[in-house]
Image 1 (cartoon, helix red, strand yellow):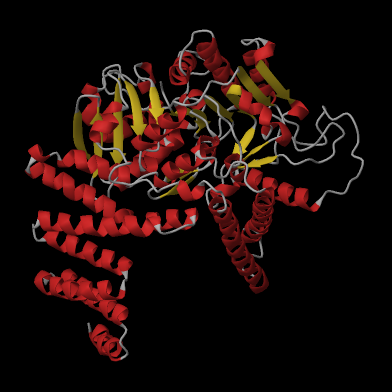
Image 2 (image 1 turned 90 degrees about the vertical axis):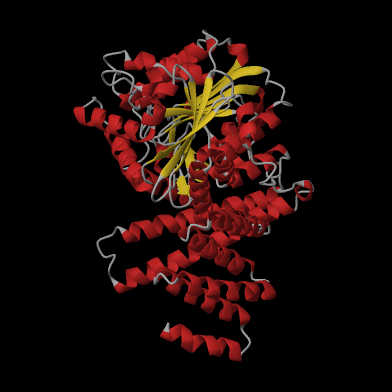
Length: 633
């Protein structure tokens, strides 16, 4: 208070009204913490018109948030609601004024606390008066708080904003990613070296960090230029959160009588679960987000074992009790559509314990399970899919690439031992990614060839494309020919960069038949430039369903790129899956789809169940890693 009292007249003396308002808000925060609520409110109310006078909308939103919190603590719930609604209205307006997608996403991540507060407040109001449907409004606010950039991306994808962009800009984008990758590789190597504390090494690490930051800014500028120079970009409007983000009746329209939506919102003190059918909705209060996150991490870790232990069963039951116990008797035999939050995004619900069974039985035995980033994304996808004509051919498979000149399939010798600078950068990045997965380079995945050949037996050769060995390369992966297929299947190595999602990728053939190095790194950025109007894209690779967990957006990674490219649904993995087990699972998955006529979600469940019933593949480690995201119909 002493320091603020010294600062306030100085701001006033120089006419800095924004600084004056910020100081007044700081006074309010101190008095609120001291329990002097009326005095705190007085300071907030003095700051508010100052922020408005100078047009500081962010400061205005912050102050309204403070007032909402204070009013709630005094029991004035409707006053709190009025103020938090006003704050969120400003936040939504500010968000739409940010052109850069990355900055828009990062800004939205910083304001998630407002949405969580509003949800919690609405649920408190619902307890006091259940007749006012505050819980349904809380569900709408939960939708408004998540996957908004993805929804805008799906809108963009329909207008083909990034696809077919200026080739020179695409070239710049790719070059910048390679430069970022190379510096990031060198920086990580130095950070783990024995002399990392040496002053010279520290200075080099700092220099590389600055360079990466600058290159990222350039990369984002190029992406913004690609968008804004597209003639159709100006006709796109940002989704109106009030009207375009789904409310309860619209969410219910996306469901059928056999489907139950389970939507989670994890909060600091308590979390919430909405269980929605076409005709009903129930809400439940769950434990705090941190308790659920810890249980989810334990469950995820214990699944990555080749045998089922008492500990893994205990962890499955513990998490199930935290997040499913309130609805255990409502699940029946329904399809479960999961909109997860926080740490729940990385766990396979299929392997959770069915609480109605006496002993451990995975949830998949009685339930087909589908994941969505938000309920609104399925509505956006469906709007786009209604106009799409099915592709004429059935299946394209890229599998068993050749990663090394020492591979027995290489029949010649390289014409030149020199490697081009751009490929040198690519190899450096791929080597670092391999080390981050605790791999010594990219070993051949022999079972992917078996997987591919067995799957291809299910389809006439006139309706399929077989790209194995050297043909499983970057050129085929980015070929226009792939637009002709309803299913695309990539059986190879994949990885996710948790720090910079745009550097996540799929590894394809890195050498030709003579052992000459070729480009084989299909990045997330490349996927955004592809046109894959597929009914299903399968990434039969490690950790392809993970990504950087960004508040308000969820996991940002390869799944997002594939949805942008046009996939109606994707099948991806949540950990480093077993090569042979994955091959067995995928063969059964395709038999269920192509011979039994099941949807991808139904087929995955049937395949997982078959492995669960097998003594060789009984452990969830072999079958639970894969999930289906997107359209379930």
